Length: 125
Image (cartoon, rainbow, N blue to C red; front, side, top):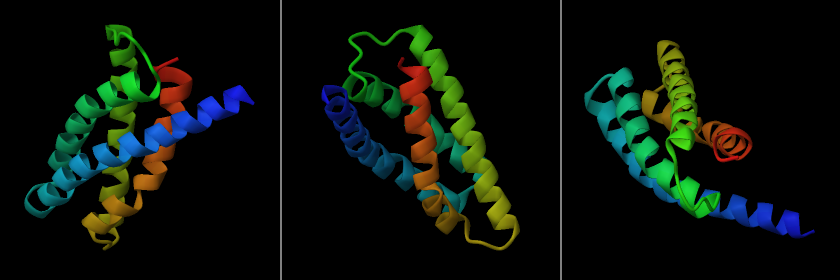
């Protein structure tokens, strides 16, 4: 029972801090998609996400007292995978005529679920 309460609190914190992170990184992504390539836009937003997310999720969600290079390396690998997915999906849908800004918004839930699962099971374990 206590474990379920802790996990539920962790999920809520992930969503709360994730929303803050989303507001910043998705604003950068949406604006940059209007003016630059999908490649540059997704890299820029992912770099911002990397800096914000690593600190927020590591310290506030997964309650680590000290973030080490070991955690950062694993978080960086996850961020790279998320970027590849983000870029690939946006580019693929754009190729088929779907607006890149709309695609970027629609894939957020998928990327959030993947990110949470791997942060919990791999990165901050």
